[in-house]
Image (cartoon, rainbow, N blue to C red; front, side, top):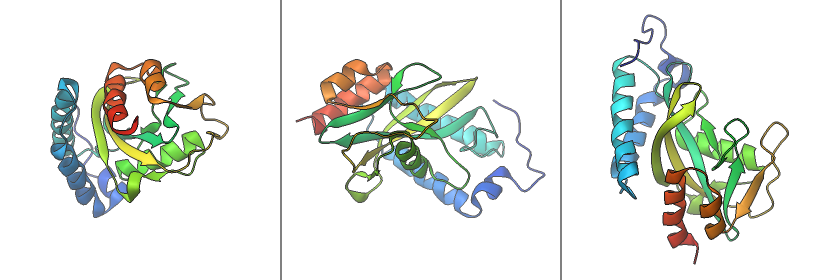
Amino acid sequence: MGQQCDASQPGPQQARYGAAMGSIIDDVLIAVRARQPIDADEEASIAALEHHVGDLLARGCDPFSQEADPVHITGSAIVVGRRGTILLHHRRLGIWVQPGGHVDPGEAPWEAALREANEETGLDLGFHEGHVELVHVDVHAGGRGHTHLDLRYLLSGDDGDPAPAAGESQQVHWFDWPRAITRADDARLVALLTHLGERFGN
């Protein structure tokens, strides 16, 4: 169990979210508990996320903040379209993964996934079929001693060529489903893409 967060100041939760904090956490946990895991790894990640969020809240920590604790929720995007799905080459980790990143102050994790995907691809993306759909939960080491409680959301929209801004990875590409499954470097992402390929790959 980690250190107690400083509850003597206006808490990081209140500073970042105000009264909406509890509602966002409730929405996250409802969606996570409603997941039908695709395999044993996701089932274990769901249990780990619930444990970590409970611990963070018990210690007065903002579960969305990387500054509050090394363990925190992140948001990432599985982008689908007629060309397949998008992967990018992570500059620091050197692996092919989906777009995503940390949750900014005031954001919900699905909003972070959408923002990061738009920034990292340069495309005009939105939630698939107009609603937020959580398609995977994955708890993993995020580097620098962090543990990411990653929530993965389904996006679609712009089927154009990715055009990431300067400062983002420039290796961002559409892959058809078989090539994406081969290119992805993480076994749990491969399992997710295999699962979604059955739904979208035709």
